[in-house]
Image (cartoon, rainbow, N blue to C red; front, side, top):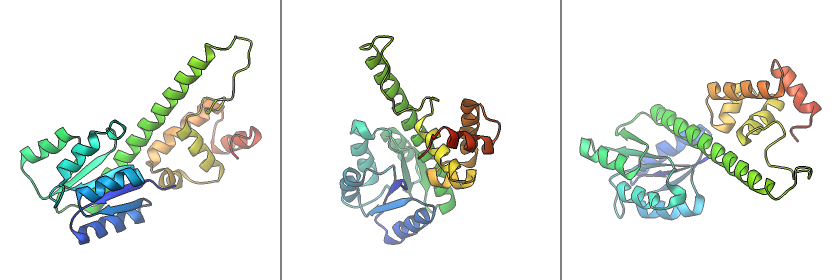
Length: 223
């Protein structure tokens, strides 16, 4: 399922150009024309990233980000500011409120796309690691209530210790997708995909992609 990006700008042309570009890049885009609309959409669609203008009527980008960051569950939500405001003090205010990147208007859509991809990749890796640690903590806690001889219940992580991201890469590998195609599906760079593939080769003790796919099939690691 594609990652969702909330685009907030009071200029219709800017919203549409950003939205079209990001949709062509494989993202699901939701739009708002001011901070008030955006704040309501954050609760409704739970976006993976926000791209927002600063100077807007009714609620500007600064106040939008302040209210977003006031919610504990959204403190790590990536935010990109787009603005014609160029004073250092204004950029500092944006960073202090919690924006992750600042692009001055006029901006290049390709640069915006690169920043979006980078922030989403980092955010997804952080969330994957956070879920892994939660599962490990839960497993350790439940283990204290079982004797050493008692078989453990099936854990979300595989017997090989694969993370959710590794399992996703493995499933797409088994479907015959290239690193570039896997990166497009999971919003990862080809280099990051290659790192996951190397980790999978090491964990399965296989030497190449063909052996890895054979291992997957023989051990029924994907449906």
